[in-house]
Amino acid sequence: MPATKLRTHRVDKPWGRHTLFPGFPDPAPDAEPVGEVWFQEPGNSAPDLLIKYLFTDEKLSVQVHPDDEQAHARGLPRGKDECWTILTAEPDSTIALGTKEPVDRDTLRAAALDGSIEGLLDWKPVKAGDFYYSASGTIHAIGAGITLIEVQQNSETTYRLYDYGRPRELHLDDGIAVADPVPYEPITAPGEVEPGRTILVEGPKFVLERWRGGREVALPEGATAWLVPITGEGEVAGVPFRAGECVTVTGSERVETGEGADLLFAYPGTTRL
Image (cartoon, helix red, strand yellow):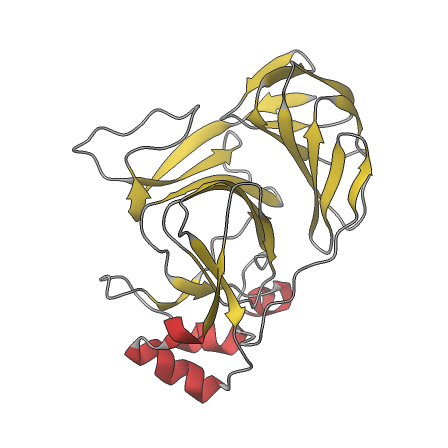
């Protein structure tokens, strides 16, 4: 089909919230907090990318993901590069990316065990409109009070190094083996390439664009793109969409939008269309 609206899958998390974001119904006050909403295709397909919203009321674990080569060595389909578009953030919200200075693996292990790993990380203040790319191997932790959209390689292989005393499994051996405990270096992206079109990511695993309004889409045969409306509404190939939804697109189509629409457009690859 030229366009398919994806179903949503809500994920309870101990760090999640009861007040989500416009477009998403809040969970009942006595229900478990919702931390993530995934957009999934029907059936058991496993496409290259996965789109999520995250809603944080507490810090996520300090964690790291393997790259493709490390994942393949474990029999997994792919590693996990990911990126975050910040929609809302409390004034004191932060995200940890990388370490303040290079750290050897013995020191990293000891710090994960005694909790001092928090002090080794580079905690960056964040605000609405910020964008970060977290490559596989980057030690990271998303802080409290944030709503964001995550675009990632479709993998849920997460190695927790530290979880603030929560009763969840840690993965120190695997995590330390794949971690690159060095200061974070932001990716270089082209930025605005024409009015209303900004390239946020251009490889190595996917391309992510941000649009103000609609435009023509021309995808190679067999390729799929993900359209994520942040605000506003529109239509593509006869499929209506609005903020809080996600639509996959194939082939050549015109994305039509209403006034004030703000969209993310993601697809696998290394270069823009």
